Image (tube, rainbow, N blue to C red):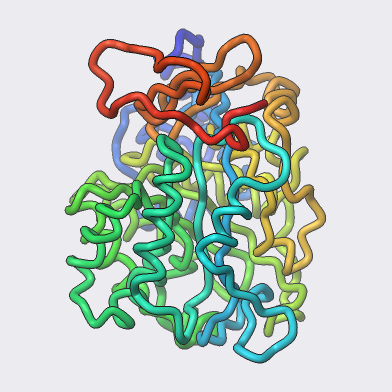
Amino acid sequence: MRNGTASVAAEDLLDHFSGTPLSPLAEKVAKGIRLSFDDGVALFESPDFHGVARLANWVREKRHGNRGYFNVNRYLNPTNLCWVDCGLCAWARKPGVPGGYTMAIEEALSEAASGWHDGITELHIVGGLHPSLPYEYYTGLLRALRARFPGVHLKAWTMVELDWIARIGKKPVEDVILELKAAGMDSCPGGGAEIFAKPVRDIICTNKITGERWLELARLCHQRGVPTNVTMLYGHVESVEDRVDHLVRIRELQDETGGFLGLIPLAFHPEGTQLPDVPPATALLDLRVIAVSRLMLDNIDHIKAYWVQIGEKLAQVALHMGADDLVGTVTEETITHAAGAETEAGLSRQAIEALIRGAGREPFERDAYYERVIRDETGRVVRANRHDFAPASAPPVSHPGPEHGPATIDPALASS
């Protein structure tokens, strides 16, 4: 067992489920046998909610012990102008519509360094499919961010955005991935996956790339050394079978590439979208999706509970139902809040640590590689993302064999 935490023995797990409808699934889980599509459907439909939770928590603790991962990150949304008219979105704007904006590169740099910070180690960069920004904007923004914030992990552009950037650049997407990587793109967010099934996408995101194209682009990223996350948007018009199909397709690609860092289940928020009459997801559905995802995705290490969407208290429960990661501090989240989220737009490092401790888990501040972030006694980042950080006025801190040289972090991002 990992991280030194005792977990229920497999024999005890099987004894608990002996004679119950979940017994065959518990036996597979205990023996490490991959669950089938039908097993996934059964987990979603099982009336034994607590039994599903117990199985998911057993797998979670076997993998991660008592750790509750998080990182200190900031969201950067350079533009919300988007030509795609997705029924699921309350955030994007068409050109000329009030509320639309586009940041020049210098504005984006200022935004990245603004507000309160706890030593940010990752920038999460997502925008709209802007109808007129040139290709050079995307590479230029990454180069500028890399120069201004060396050592900060740049998680930039979803598969949907990569497809669009390749189109406006009139380049093969394989070349675009490599050029963006050279400019500073370290990994990609998992947005835009939604639900892969075409009948669902025809309703919630008609003009967005297909599920098959999303998976193709993720494959190309992974093959070129760019890891990605992956999402699943649930609680709208999808069926149980659609959810399981989504998870199975993710699992199949992970078998092939190993490039997914984690899954982030996303609850659909109907307010302000073109589907306002869809009832919001229940807490039970939020937790069941996390639990089933943990059980089905046997080849993906991390299942994340996005506290911004499901709320802080429910995220604590999720840490005992398959989730091991609360994503991050997510300073200045705007997309879910545009659809009516009532959570904070960001948490401090101390607040998210308290949240994890309150759930009975041990906070583990991670970097993009799930290695522990090292801070000094003042809270300043000393090492993260396999970089050594040092204040501008101090000499670099040496560590044997770093993958990258010492970096001087911008004071706005380094201070606590």
